[in-house]
Image 1 (cartoon, rainbow, N blue to C red):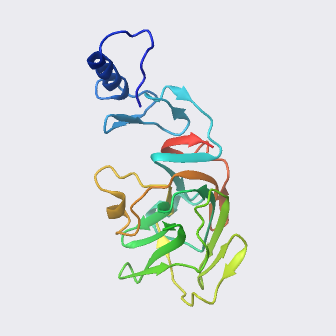
Image 2 (image 1 turned 120 degrees about the vertical axis):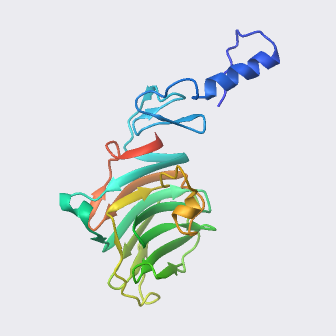
Image 3 (image 1 turned 90 degrees about the vertical axis):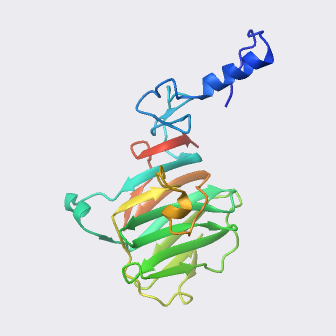
Length: 235
């Protein structure tokens, strides 16, 4: 992003230098605990602006510029020491992008991910301690139409409910899906690797759009103002 003062009447070269100075955070520390990534400030949830100087309220988050949120499953503090069995996942979202990672959770070789591929819903998860990867694509029309869509994924056996329509017989598996209990929404904090590497080749593009609600194992989040994340705006 580049800002040019209308009263700045110097030559084009100076204008270009002004723009580079404004958008770079190499020489200026990002405010409010923001982090400089690729010469751009990555702001914490509740902050926005070139240098994270603006305060915003985020109840329904808007994802763009590779932003992500991190939802930790609450309750027992000892859960950080063991795996969490995922019984169900719910998400309500809207997007116009055909390819996107909606959520991802992982521990060691076990993982689960939900996203879009060419506009169609895509569910991936690992079985047998990561030795087997399963990809599910339910027979449902594309959902990257800018409308709100709800997805409920249930295990034991696996079934899906998309916008109120049930899909059960297509999936006869009884997977035991376990993760760390930390769910990344929209993207992962990929500092030293790409998203496609982090997701084992399953998803290459971060989510762009809005997410109204997320839930796992009957614990729901519909106010995201206190959730950790980076580069999140308000819908």
